[in-house]
Image (tube, rainbow, N blue to C red; front, top):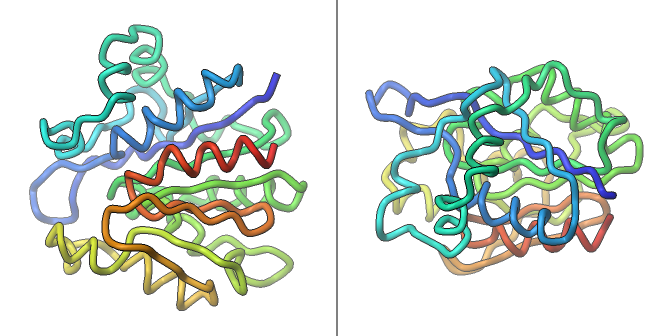
Length: 224
């Protein structure tokens, strides 16, 4: 059985705005069911463990999707989300791959989390694929492979500058995902805002936005 680690943020504060953030529910629910329906064993971790914070905006009526509806009637999945394991207890050797869900939360905790950084490096160096969607490609900011940024020279995508502008958070986030991927030497690509877009370059998979969650998860399964 394929063993997949999903990593979520524990951060719930949107900068100094006083508003809540967290992970984007679609970016957990859609990949989770892609993996479960394929027969994979899914383990969910976060820096603090326990209940991972859902970005309240992601659960607004206009953002509902079939995987989210399915999640809301799935007591087992809700229990998994309420009882995420602590990231510090995780070893890459116990899993076949790792998938990072986005939302704005990871920009504050997972990007700078030493355990997360070393975990991604362990997965990648051992020949295992790594995937991240939307804001989550930002977690590669400090990740190195053979002494160079992991994304250097690779085709990548992630939440676009224009998408960040559309949600009026350009001046709130610590950095812009698109700009940072480019700064690190990534060959950044995107499609029209909010369209589904996933890129596979070797063992690295990235998705542009929430709508790309399913495509990125399916691409990861194809690599395993």
